[in-house]
Amino acid sequence: MINLILFGPPGCGKGTQAENLVNRYNLLHISTGDMFRAEIGGNTPLGIEAKSYINKGELVPDSVTIKMLAKKMSEHPNVKGFLLDGFPRTIPQAQALDTLFEERGESITQLIALQVDEDELTRRLLKRGEMSERADDRNEEIIRNRFSVYNEQTTPVAEYYAEQDKTAKIDGTGSIADVTERLYSAIESVMV
Image (cartoon, rainbow, N blue to C red; front, side, top):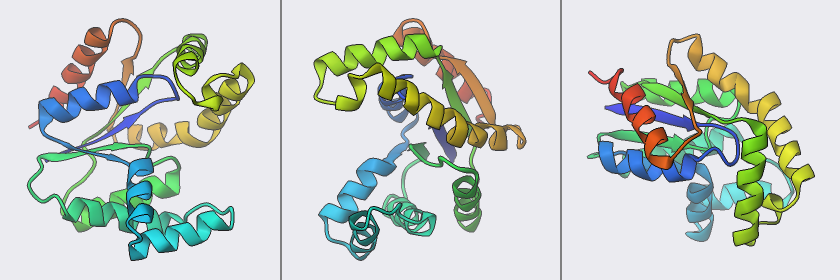
């Protein structure tokens, strides 16, 4: 199995590249945002629990998110691995994720960090904001704040996996095809 974390700041191309990786390696793409919407929309016990926190304006506890991940993984026993997008965002989440994989007799193969200069990311997000209804992509001040939050709270996760020799930093600039090839090369260097 190959279990990947696709990592990077808003606008770095994770969504675009996730599709390429899923198709090439027959992975199940797990986006925590999609997972939450499905559980809540399906009115499942985990969805009801998550919604109870959200309705109070609270963050959903990591334990609930991990239970959702475990459920999602168990529903797809025949995939060749998982591509996680949007999780983990903190060191405690990364530690909980490692425990989940250990319980399955597996581990994270690699965290792939797409790296793009913040000015380029800002240009990308503002352009995306022109073509979408996302208000958070239309305001440069909000965009820059999202980068600050990412750098303070989420970047340590890449360092956590780097200490395990499981982080690959990939240049996320250039054409989509060029970035895709860099990703393939990094992944295939760790595949057994």
